[in-house]
Image 1: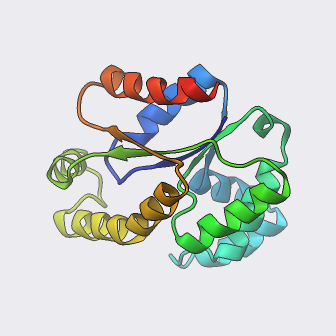
Image 2 (image 1 turned 180 degrees about the horizontal axis):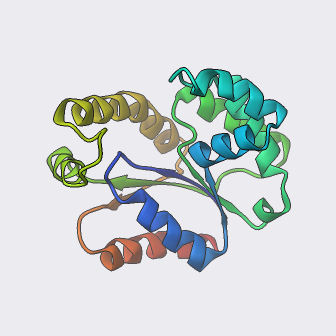
Length: 185
């Protein structure tokens, strides 16, 4: 099963991703984790990415796409994967589609975890992390909305988008996800 997982900061994506990976035995591909691992392993992609990461810049698409392409070739991805944090833009989504098309391995589903902004704000403000100040939270949520709304239209137009209500208990939310994913087993 090949899944893209989309959700705003504070939606509970990390918690649900763990449950998806455990139940469906898919590889978890978090671009943040992958970038850090590539940097620490001093791979070619990691060395290139480090130049941007160390200065707080976004890693360019060509580097991210090369990293994803490399990672998708690994054995643990053959049974399926959950892409978390990628794609973030239409250009990245198109590059991913092209890469998957070349390998004849299209996406099965794009899961969107929906949580109202006021609830996200409460969750993020309650975490007490240094980057969870109100003005920073507003910026992160605005950036997510601006980047992601085009992606939702893009994948919706392809018939891949499935939305899940991110309010409720962890188990209630996961039950909705299972209902969707069980169709693709």
